[in-house]
Length: 172
Image (cartoon, one colour):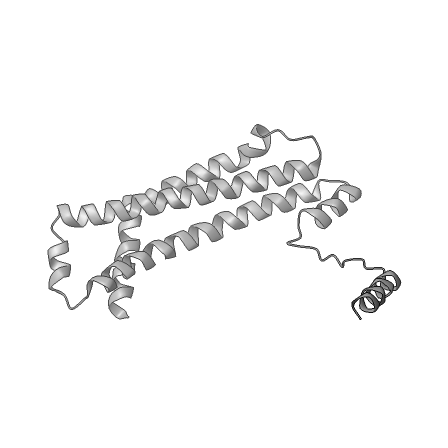
């Protein structure tokens, strides 16, 4: 376990040295405030917030995927070019520990990135929610800020009982 943690720590140090997460972080911080002005919706506050929320999370997920690909590719090619892979090969670390350690490092960077940018997005959503009127705020909290709303099916019990009895009589 210590070997994988050390490899993950080395991966985080490489990412800081490469400055890829920092560049992508500031790129997204530049784009996120522009989204409400660039994206046009039907004109209601709920539609605008839903559109901004959807596209901002889509942008963050896309940048996380790009960042993961760039970091892992740069890490592996850098280790092969600088012949550092031969030093790792002599250590008592199996291949799966090496790859899993790299994976943990990229996951830690992405988790930090997602937590920070997700909090910015939710802060922007909250600020957009607060500028609306009471009627719009109720609609947003009822329709946009809920994961799911339960719905009980309506069964007319008397009719159901009558049909069940009729079918029972028919089958007898």
